Length: 392
Figure 1 (cartoon, helix red, strand yellow):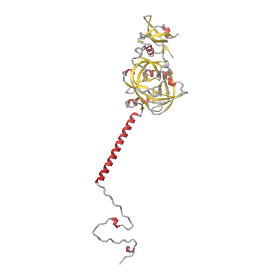
Figure 2 (cartoon, helix red, strand yellow; figure 1 turned 60 degrees about the vertical axis):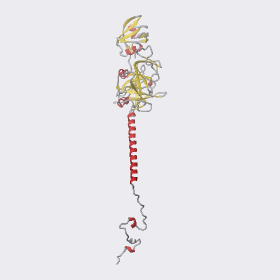
Figure 3 (spheres, one colour; figure 1 turned 180 degrees about the vertical axis):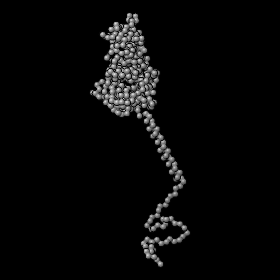
Figure 4 (cartoon, one colour; figure 1 turned 30 degrees about the vertical axis):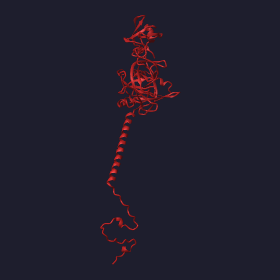
């Protein structure tokens, strides 16, 4: 007897399936008439599995190679770009670059006619910067940008136009300074490096140079003469007029001048052209860092440069020595009894081979120092004593 709410009476009743040989049916066969059959499932063959494995392997390999290439490129970029750009940025060892580059600064000089960008060297941690004096002429404002991108207003402490050197100062403390080297320890023909700054990049600019000689006299196109200079053949000229010369270990040995040479002579025989065939378009000239720091210390301590002064105008004597052309009235030379046509051959035992030698020899003395001067007069050697004064 049927029970109440018998499902046989409900709409959608599904009669029992007839019995057949199968003991199991797919669930889709048990669905109602309005349910579409499920699409057949494709069996994955072993061949398709192998293909998927190969594709996956290619993806992994390609991704890995790309990652390695990226890391290599990033590594090269980090090695060559944190401190420097330029043709030889990768040639200067990283330790040397890290030592010198932070002390090389960019100096932007606002002048009535233009804005000039030059290179400077931080020589004291309190913010004193060494640079060229010619570039500061007519400066209305000066901005120093350090290697880490900080910008400072700077003031001129003092200049030495005779040597194209100057000191400016920024407000700072604990600023990076370089290691200073001895130019006399560098062999002729050695590879050295030129470090400068570009007008637009906060990083240092690096080029190689071939060290040529020391003790050169540079007769500049403006009529001035610079003495005891370093000569170097630079592979690529720096983007600014001034730059720093350093060794492969990052020791600073020179400060390049912005002046252009007409002629350059060797200190050994200043009356004849140098055997190095200087200058040419690739040659640049630098003060030794020892002399540049001496000038800077004098400027910082006293506000000016104090040069010992004898009071003679000389030229190179063909037979060697400095030939006096004229003697300044009321000068130490006049008081000592020196005369025109005297040929100075030594100062306090230091041999004088030419007029440049005389100037360099007098750099070792200060005002009020007494020196003995040997001169050849009418074929006889005469010794005079002079008390030097301050040229300033």
